[in-house]
Image (tube, rainbow, N blue to C red; front, side, top):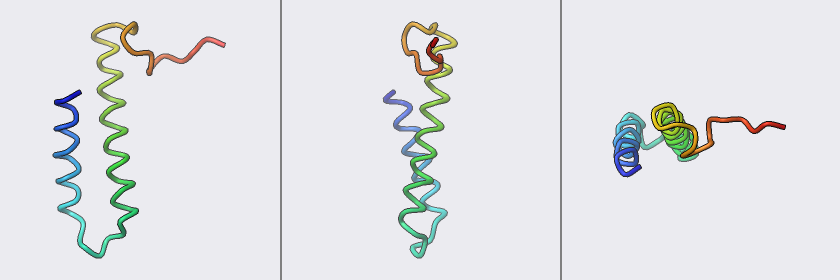
Length: 64
């Protein structure tokens, strides 16, 4: 997770360098949030495929 947070920080820094100062702050927050959600979702699903679903049940839907 430490490496993932570093990667996310680099992605958000790169995206924020594309925005100008006139860009709405809320838009920048939403884009940053989407980057974080997508990276964590991809990493957690990949982790479950490699290590097995016992570590984190984020990708598995509950049986109702």
